[in-house]
Amino acid sequence: MVDDDCKDGLSKVHDTAAELYQLAALILGDETRAADLVETVVTRTNIDPCADAETSVNAARVNLIETAVAHLSQADPGAFNAPSPSTGSSGCIDDDDLAAAGISADRLAEMVHGPERRALRDWLNKLPVAQRTVFVERAILGWDNATAAATLSKAASRKWHSGQVSELFRQALCSLATSLVHAAAAQA
Image 1 (cartoon, one colour):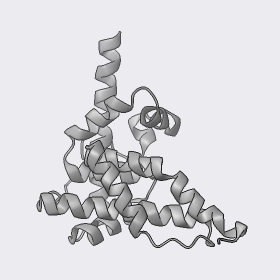
Image 2: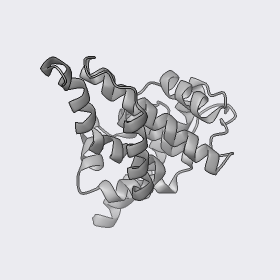
Image 3: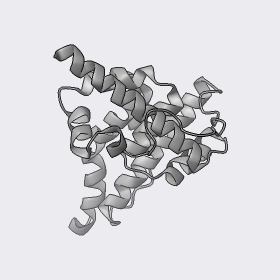
């Protein structure tokens, strides 16, 4: 029997299964594999139901990203080779945040959870695996470059630096901004 004070952590993780599924689907690009991954992650995540609920959810998120990266890296050993540092500007966006691409957090949430979900997934599926993963880590989860680099380094067994994450994220933001402009022009 679980003490009522301890139910919150475990309940929160189970309530977050939909979020974990969505994250997995965005990274993997395959809903069936996403469901399998979430089941594995929830089963393997060491959860203390008496701990802070958000701590348990964050542990599940980190485990999900690390497991997804490990699976993707195993399927394509070169997918998470860290990019070489570039010289100069990386393209159409000079900063590595959503606002630099003209996308608000509310707009992104609308794209993730609303009727544009399929278009977002289709766009993500066109990105290289590492870039797609970095986008999810930075834009969806709100991780900073150092946290994303550490997770990629650990899960892919390759050394990543925050500058490499920043560059891939800027490239993804540029691609998304371009995609949104084209979609708006097509609707006009």
